[in-house]
Length: 178
Image (cartoon, rainbow, N blue to C red):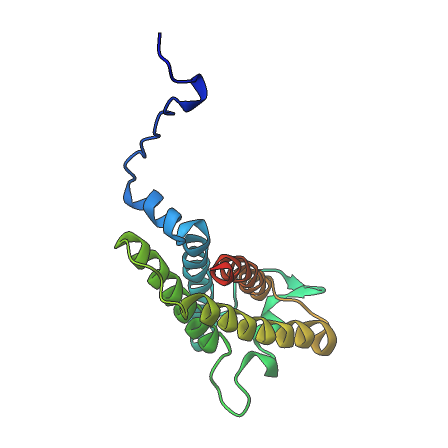
């Protein structure tokens, strides 16, 4: 019989399982948020590239073209080009998605290399998403109030930008808790 009380016995020490690169990334903060931002950037870049190609080819998009939902009309309106130019607004949209994807990629690559994300990364991505949302609000205003028509492709891009903003807000939260 031992003279030590039961409460003084040592508790078993948990052994941490080895992690693969993806779970290590999630533990370091890249996780699903950064992957979502990268995926949204790829999809948004695809839509923006498609619409840019159609603009320069002079081809109508594959979408609804009658009534309130009318992509063709919206994409031929004066709001579909950068003011004072013939550059379609989809080109700045492509740039926005490229930058957003690059910022997400920095987070993912940092995690894969088992490095901390740069401190500036999450706040900068949030600011970038806010700027994107400001543009989206302008375009939604133009579609609903000025044109009285809505573009399905544009709405898809607008939803992606809004979702990116929500994810960027969520990703900033843990960074502020440090």
